Structure formats: C-alpha cells, structure tokens
Amino acid sequence: MSAVALPQIALPATPVAVSETCHCMRRPLANAQQIAEYCGVPLKTVYRWSSRGGGGPRLMKVGRHLKARWSDLDAYLDSCSIGARQ
Image (spheres, rainbow, N blue to C red):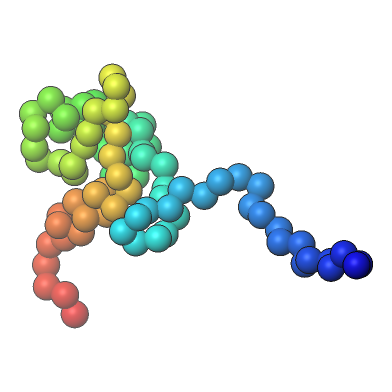
C-alpha cells in the first residue's frame, strides 16, 4: 500500500490571542505613558484619574501597573465630544 501525501498547512509563527466572545485578535493593554500620549494629556493627569477614581477613562491595575483597554480609551474620548454633529 502506498502512502498518501497530505497537503501542508502553514501555521502562524506566533500564537494569536482570540476572545471567546468575539473571535477577534486582542490588542495589548495600554500602559500609563501610552494612555497619556493617546489622550494628549500629561502623565501626571493619568495618575490623577487613577487616584480619584473618575474623571477619565476606565483604568485598571495589573499588579502595580496602571493599564487601560484601547476600546475604553476610545469610548472615553468619544464621550468627551462637544457640539452638534453634522
């Protein structure tokens, strides 16, 4: 009996993180410096948002590090919009 050649399947070089709910790729969390740069505020403001528990985007502590989801940053910036939409 002869062996049957099976097609080769290329696998990604690095594993891809997939959400169980949306099956999309997850982005790494933003750190405090990235949050400040993305929102256009000083780093001190980001830490103030964290210590006061409001007035800014949703933040989380991962160990001793301040982090945020990029989607939470976008939602916060969208909520800061002023004026009428055209």
